[in-house]
Image (cartoon, rainbow, N blue to C red; front, side, top):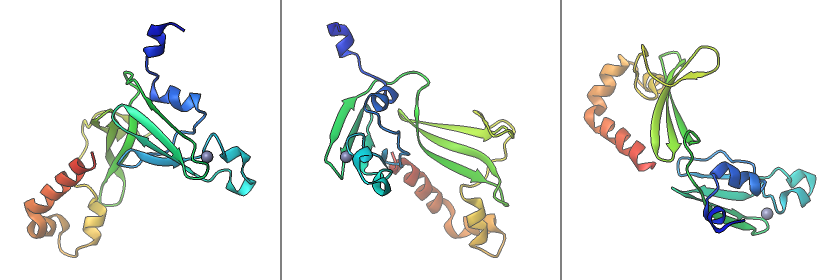
Length: 171
Ligand SMILES: [Zn+2]
């Protein structure tokens, strides 16, 4: 291997593949648990699928630590075009719970919005989509008077600011 090739970073998917790690579902902080490539397969059948390996994805690095055998790894990765990782999705539903659109938080840092295409897939724009409040059905259930009116009256700008601050703080 040449020096140039050695200095090239792998993509995060390549890192998971090389260590034989099943990609975990990551939470809003970029953390998640999965099985350990070092110990899981050697454990009793009942324990083999236990998610013991904690994965943390940062801006340009991925770390792992196994709570069972203490095996660990860490690597910087290279961002590749079009290979963003989903960190979280936020469903925006209408009054009866149908998903109208979704906000997707991606890594590297980006927010994108998409709408269902009606065939199980997604279209990455919000053309013709009715914009609703986040958690509209829950907001409606929590009140008896016309929901939007009462929600705005009671919580108004303060709650909207909190919602924005909350979304930002998850970064
Ligand atoms: Zn382990």
